[in-house]
Length: 185
Length: 185
Image (cartoon, rainbow over all chains, first blue to last red; front, side, top):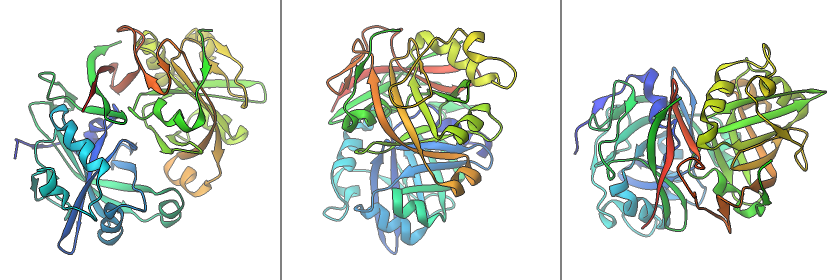
């Protein structure tokens, strides 16, 4: 597991504010899974909330529905192939953790694991909103703990040290963008 | 107005998939406004849907509540100062179109205007979900028309020609990231 330090909850939205693609990890009753989700966003500052789309067809959905918990993991460019792989295979057919070599570590407050090698992690508890879950596959959740690799995020700021340890933004097919130049206005 | 060509609705999600910060434009009964929103995401493919957070305190909220429509405009790095400005001032106090020199052009199917100089535009009609609008400031909408500047998006793909004509990702304060390198895995 790479280094990780706690991110104050009031700053947790900054882990998602720039729109990176995330990995959604989940677990319930001895089963676990991980999928990719470009469709995620921050929803509130403090207490921090997030929104993410989790399709009915996925094993992740079954595990999240059963446990009421998930982790949003922010992968690095080094993990783009893993991100694509877990976004295009089903946990119903394969153990994605062994299949794509996604190492996992226990989270602090939820049963879903933290994916090793990621840049940041948001431990989340689902806010029960069954109508939008059913109608739009849309899940709202409260962030109950947040972590980041201090090499890339500290004091509430991202500071990517090189081209590989950057967050990524999925487009379609196998195409991604890396998070690019930081600038101030 | 820069060039724009229609984006097929089934490809409209690709305008937001990489998580850019958008400008939300709105209009009702002779009033109009524009605000910045980092908290936006695609919600469905076809028909395309989007989700965006619109705070109760904003004039945009009043205009969207009254009209049931808005446009998500994808600004370029050249418009980062404008994006910050419309994200930090209120349309209740100033006409943001004149105050920040945000040129506007009529949309095709909604009353909200298209902001000139942006990279892409999604014309949206709100899906009535009053509970989540009220509780979370969360708006779901169907994309009824989509447009892009062909210099940056065509055939369903972004292809940023230079450093300035790129989408942007807001962090906090005056800090942004530009969309970075494209890569395939």
